[in-house]
Image 1 (cartoon, rainbow, N blue to C red):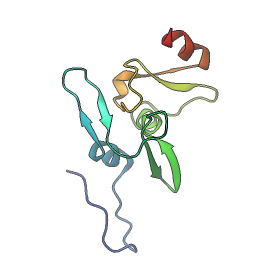
Image 2 (spheres, rainbow, N blue to C red; image 1 turned 90 degrees about the horizontal axis):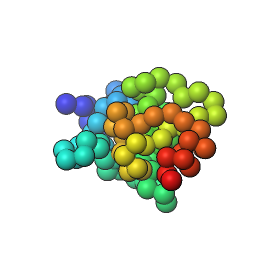
Image 3 (tube, rainbow, N blue to C red; image 1 turned 90 degrees about the vertical axis):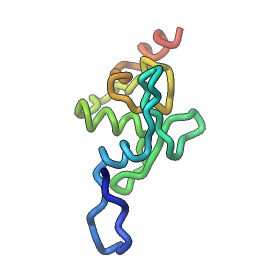
Length: 103
């Protein structure tokens, strides 16, 4: 189980990024998605503050489980569910790949 946020702001025992993603999401058994339950942007992508930056949850999930995202590439969803953060449903691609996948 993940650690709760500290009550004393001077304490630096914050949950790790992986714990935050795990605590802020819920599995959907019939489709395999891991749905982000926190804040989302207008397009439905999960977002959270991490290291004083606003980040997209699926991109953070990719970085944690698969490593860095090369410049010029996007993190795309095979499931077409913007709030899904399951690394098995994510893949790297270009904007053209995203358009092709959408068609």
